[in-house]
Image (cartoon, rainbow, N blue to C red):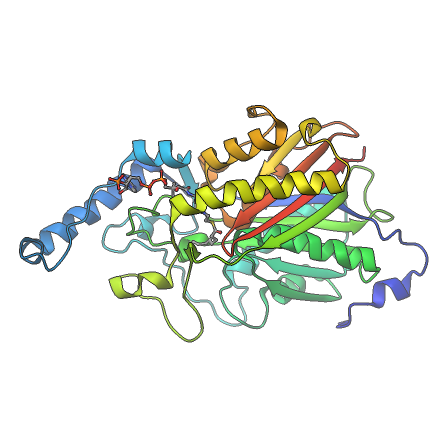
Length: 389
Ligand code: CO8
């Protein structure tokens, strides 16, 4: 197996353009899905159990009573109606309320790699690409199930890809940061074909007992094949420009790490799961991202009002409405800014890629669009693309 990253350019000197394109995408959607009604029924049963079991302590003021969630609130505040998950039954069991994914032997493929491979295979098939011709795999996601060996190397092995792979984590912006990294390998001539795989099992770090956030996330895996234009299939998307940005914020946080462990049952350990100040995130991220898109459009000499479609990060329908309006100069319709949030929930870094995967085939040669992510860090990434054929 090759372990260096500069073999491609050496193999085919002079034949590459150094111009990165998106050749194809792939998507894996878990079969199981939880509707808001099912979620709220289970959450409210948990609240009733908690309040019943702690009735005396609540009456004495030692324990706080919990409050019911509501389908109406969830849909109005976020636009989410359902989410796919890898392990439904334990999540909606009021006595468990977290996924239960069996440990696997070291000689079995890990679950993150497994769903990553399913998305990646689809991307490879759609591009007609033999895995042997891929040079690198980046596993870009907001949570990794172990530190090493890298999930990317496991995916590489399962697909029979020679070359190299590594994991990267930039929360909800992992996929766009992965696309720019892959594009930079192509620009530098270090690779001609790079898979960016984003398996997002967000259900593992969501606090299903927290009324403020229990409805937000869902599981999925996406893959993006970034290649040199010289080897890309006829049907591809030219990458016109990529831009990344990070600004430190404590408003979205997860303190889980190798120095501690998460115990969802213990209130004291709730910060080892996803926590956020949703209102602040909303207020601060919308202007930051809208301005970043406008600045990047100006740098690339693109008229933002003429963008044919925005594939925005899928965190909140209201955020996307405001960002799209600022960018396009008018209220965007579903065709201009497609939503997958309603059925997938927030799938972290995969959201904008799912939207692109499901709603891009109908665009015409020359149409320009924007893949954009934003989330914890804060982090944000833009990838302006143009349909080549
Ligand atoms: N049911 C009923 N009422 C509720 C509920 C509920 N479930 N939850 C809260 N309420 C109540 C509150 O108590 C509050 O009541 P009051 O007014 O009396 O105080 C009222 O409803 C309003 O609450 P909020 O102010 O919290 O409601 P918002 O309108 O702000 O909506 C949202 C909450 C939906 C969270 C919204 O603020 C939002 O979407 N913000 C942006 C979030 C965002 O984009 N976050 C990015 C996260 S993604 C990321 O980068 C993380 C990556 C890691 C992923 C993997 C982890 C699993």
